[in-house]
Length: 554
Ligand SMILES: NC(=O)c1ccc[n+]([C@@H]2O[C@H](COP(=O)([O-])OP(=O)(O)OC[C@H]3O[C@@H](n4cnc5c(N)ncnc54)[C@H](O)[C@@H]3O)[C@@H](O)[C@H]2O)c1
Image (cartoon, rainbow, N blue to C red):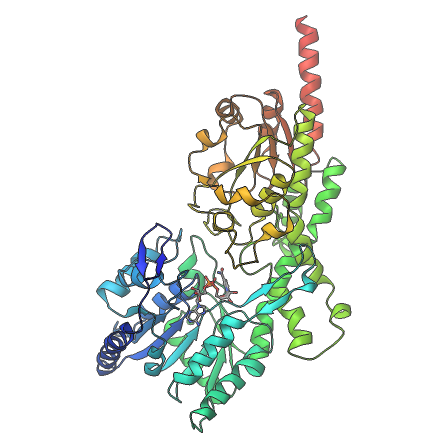
């Protein structure tokens, strides 16, 4: 039976068979030969995910001073049922990742169809043609418990197998550039030995040219710019690799305006990535305790943060949403903690790593509190959470993007479901919330957050709705979980009219202004919010105002 890979839009692509390899390699060899005749280099990008697909297009779009293309890019992706569809789609000039950045789709169409400098393949033998290989496969951190990252471990199986595949095939003068975020030490102590061993097995005497330069990509409206027009950090395992990686990056990204930092050793550039993301995770996590403090003492954390931000030295303080998601922040500090013991050989990791680890645990569990707030808001309206119809507005991990990986909203949905609520979801940017629809197999079998909660089975039927008015109809509670543009200026009167009744409204992201909060109370709603203790004061004022108006009228 022929196996298929199904794209997110439902198109079915048969997986290639062993007989397809010879023809595919011939196709790539012809393309590479032509590129070489035109003075171009061949670059293979391993992994066509969120980072690799766009990085491949950026490299393929690079030109010399005369505007001539300098690189033929071959994007290589495993022909698995889960991912193969990315290859035929990309070869039609269609981006395999959905992006809000208007630059992504035309750039991919241009380099594939017009400039013909990007092609995608399933055939790892394309590595034999490479002058440079860019590694953009995933390196995960598998947590075993919710709220205790210390019991987890780094899962670098995909990265290690990719490196073996590379070592078995590349020419000896080929540069290998790891862009994957890795546990510090990986490039020198895991990847380099894999490549050296593979070279030795092939009888090659050269030292593999290996470098590291992490990605700082931000999915969203600035997707392309966050790769191409952004400050980069790089390093090589030795001097020849350092020289090559610097030259490559200067060729393909905008290092004229955005300075390239070259570090002495890969462990330094690896650590830079881990520290910058741990820093971000930590400044968000430390506000969780002040968020609870604010809720319990009549303080509005939104105003506290706005007042602090006025100081230029404190301008990057951020209001934390219902959980700190995205692919990077929940795991990167954990990669450092894990590396300290398992790659670098120290045994006092638990004494040394106290803040970065606590930050991840706090961020991973912040969303649970939304269950409590929703329960209390409904109770104040004489309703029960069990059986209540609750609409969650926003599935993605941050505003105005369609990326749902490790979003705080997932924890919110799972906790409320465990408490018996009936959940619906609205998100203008998300068509499929795979964390639920495919919870048996996504992000990998046995890895769904479903395993930390009761009664999750039926969430596989959860579908994301696009029409807000229809989604809210009949809801008893509405949770504003993400600062999507569509939610910022929602009229309380409209929302209550669409719901058909007063609602409990839970603001997880400092979205509601005081006028809106007041209006919700006037309409008979209940309001609660993460870090928003002042809502009780507004509630008291409105109730008192209604009473005195009533007394005056009577
Ligand atoms: N997504 C982000 O926002 C972001 C930001 C900065 C850094 N990063 C880092 O970039 C790296 C890649 O992240 P991503 O978001 O692109 O991940 P992803 O899961 O979207 O993509 C990885 C891709 O690699 C493919 N792959 C795995 N093994 C392969 C192999 N042997 N051969 C060919 N392809 C293979 C997978 O099928 C997948 O398509 C990670 O280390 C991540 O931490 C991601």
